[in-house]
Every structure is written in structure tokens, then in C-alpha cells.
Image 1 (tube, one colour):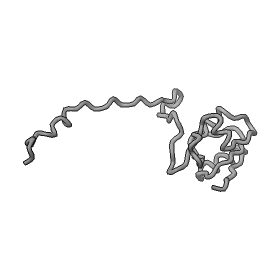
Image 2: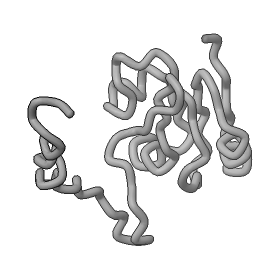
Image 3: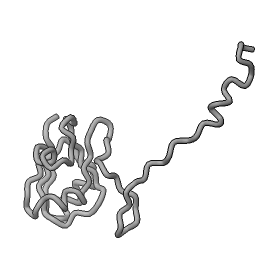
Image 4: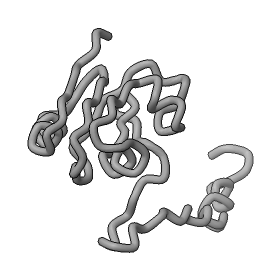
Length: 118
């Protein structure tokens, strides 16, 4: 037994838990939304609903344009587009990587997924 006795860690049991951080909720679907792009194993991952709001039909979405609009952090070197959300505009998206669903959704909307070299 150490010098403090068997109850030296009791302060851990009585310490208050940190308050939960409120997450934004999408008003239409009621689903939880991420307020910032989520990181996917070294990639920054913008969602289609962000692209739909910020880019016009027929626009070419580049990594630099994503950084300028604040969707992608300037520290993030690589961008991976995921299939979250819906695409209604024909966009040409240039990124380092695409999920299978993202490429399918872009093609179905009349857009293109162009992969960049890493």
C-alpha cells in the first residue's frame, strides 16, 4: 500500500464530467451535421451540400477554390470528396481522391470527378 492509502484516487470518482459540446442539427432532416469538414485519414473531406451552396451550376471546383471559400483548411494538403449529401448541379470537381458514391453522384448529376496527382 502506498503512503496515501487505498482512497488516494477517490477525487477521480467525484470530479465533475465535462459538459457535452452541442452539435448543429440540420433543420430539414433533423440529422446531426458537422460544422467543419471531417478529416478522413489525412484527407479533408468536403460534403456535397457545401459544394451545392457555394458553387454555381457548371462550375469547376478546385482545391484552391475550396480553400478560398473556407471549406478546406489551408494546412490540409489532400482533399477527398465523400458521397455525403445530394448533388443536383453539374459540377466538375477536382480533388485528390473520390469515394465510389461521390463519383457516381457527380456523374448522375451530369458533372465530372477529376482525380489529381498526390
